[in-house]
Length: 325
Image (tube, rainbow, N blue to C red; front, side, top):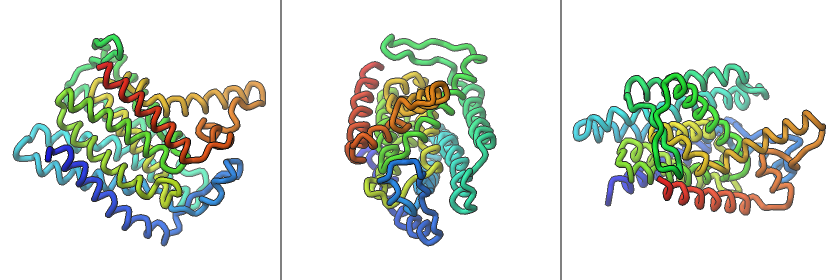
């Protein structure tokens, strides 16, 4: 059995164990979902469902990363020393989401973490990771251009703000995709699988390890997150996954690949931007509700159908992505 399968099974099992422990605790603490009054009527019955379940993903990533760090510390020290920093971005972003969820759900502050403080937190982590890539790992600023099958070398002064934009943009996109049972976790799992496949092709073992941990964690979480969800990930989980996807893409020097393989989260973001801009200008809405998955839901699509179609579209796009490297 190759090491990827072992890592996947390990993180999958750890994720399930943590879910069985964390979900009852969240129920006991009454950390329940707060549904919008102007949202889809079908969502009102989800009121009170345990959220902040991204803790399950974070704990799985921490435990699995530490175990594998010590596993490779002696045999492959260069790989081992890169495992923990790679986990830094998703865990850092997840921590910002955890603070936001904590203020909303535990402290009963409906506004949560102030947008400015939230952005500052994400920005600090983004800058730290970008400088780690450029200054410490010294991997260069080469960026792969899909379909042209070539790399371009960006000047450092341009690459640093570009990388920060990718981290913040991807995180926000995944966060907006989290609105239907199993949607964000399903789409993110497929995107992560694609990125791990690319890391295997390129022989970047540390990405393969951390990415596979995240895939296993997501699959374990999905058991409890698929419709009807027993737990929601909250900002803790969606920010963590967004950080993971963007952080891995930058490490692989393929952030532009996200335009293809992460098109679904990108469309979710664009739908919100269109809705807000059009409403401010005309007072009318383009979509019945944004992000666009709610538009389909209000058009009569069942949650399972939306998740299936969005996941299949992402799968096809990921196959395309792998074939353009």
